[in-house]
Amino acid sequence: MSKRLLKLVSAVCMTALIGSAFVGCGSSNGDGSKSASGSGDSVTLTFGSHQSGLPTSGVVQDLAKDFEKETGIKIDFQISPDAQWRDLLKVKLDSGEAPDIFCADADPLNLVTRVNPEKYVLDVSSEEWVKRMDPNVLPSISYNSKVYGITFPGKKMYFYVYNKEIFEKLGLKIPTNYQEFKNVCQKIKDSGVTPIYEGTQNGWHQVLPLFETGAMYQQKHPDLYNKLNKNEVDLDSIPELQTIINELKECADLGFYGDNYLSNSVENAKEAMAKGKAAMFIAESAWRNEVKSDFPDFDVNKLGIFAMPWGDNQTIGVNPASNAYFINKNGKHVEEAKKFFDFLAKPENLQKRLDGQPGLSELCWPEVKSKYSKEDQAYIDSLQKGMVMQAGVKYIDSQWMDIGKDLEAMYSGSSTPKQVLETIMNRRTEQAKLQKDPDWDK
Image 1 (cartoon, rainbow, N blue to C red):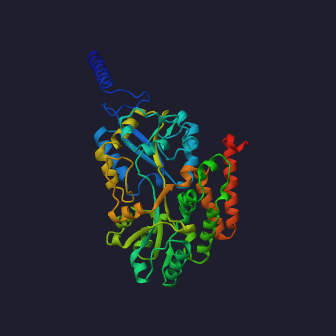
Image 2: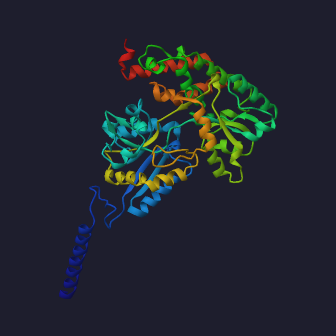
Image 3: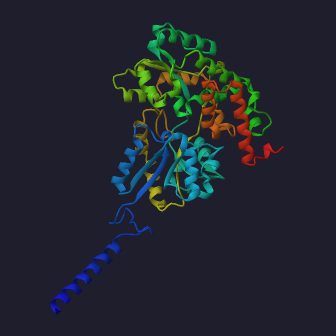
């Protein structure tokens, strides 16, 4: 008995010694897990995003794997549909269940209503990489002179990407006004090809013609954005906006979007363009590289770009804002999340991101050279540019997905172009009053 008792005591002592050794080697995070620098279980960061917040190439996930190899910290990506993410993120933030890192669309006008940075987001103003970002994007991720996020895409500019081969075969020239555009569409349709691929299923894509043409509106109506933001004028003071809504309806009725366009998704546009089923699609210039990535045998040089000629527009809308990543300051792994941001901001990883994201033309990090071709750059330089409406006018971007539904209702015949504009204006007033905007209390 005494020998057995002695063995039992020895075993207990040895277990205690081993346990104390592990406690000494690993540092606890307060929630029972061990940090990546310790020998215990590695930390897993949750990363919440909408579909459009992460490149379809998977480059961010690839960088996350590199980060895990380097630090032992894992990233668990939780991706939600575009149409649900804005509301879902608000619910998660308010309930205290937000992920450690979350992606959100960022712009100077709507950052507070989307993520309430002072309440939920970590201030990263003092991080080294903040000084290396393009100063033009900082207002989109800042509030009250503090920077709250990190972002990567350069300025967004949307064009019609078109199939040069189809145009040449039919003897067509790039249209520079709506009538020319309509004539081009009719000839393409008559040839048996769908003139325009429109991804209405995604909700946001069909809205682009209305507000990416903001530079034209500003050209024709001096001080427009300031007047709209002060509630001195409303959207019906821009006749070109109503004209474009009318033109969208006309093109749909003429069959220029094809027969089943209401079930089209943006993701399928690459196949439609690569296989010559459609002749035009609204996208950023570098979207052509995504087509090439998915269809390696396709000659991407067959695709060109031109300014959207809705409402006779010949300007390029520039959007300095984009989606950005934020750290949940109430999360359990704030320090690990900061390390991930530091990792993403390393010059070599910025280059990997640009190289690994075919649909991106440039980063908002001046140290990384853009991918614009000489031909594209010359064309872009030839046109006047201005800020898109959703980045310069209050209560536009916040109802973007709703406007997508308004246009769908118009296409299906349950609403009129005039009613679409009225609905946008009414919704804008409702949102302003909900925010207790003093300019709407006059």
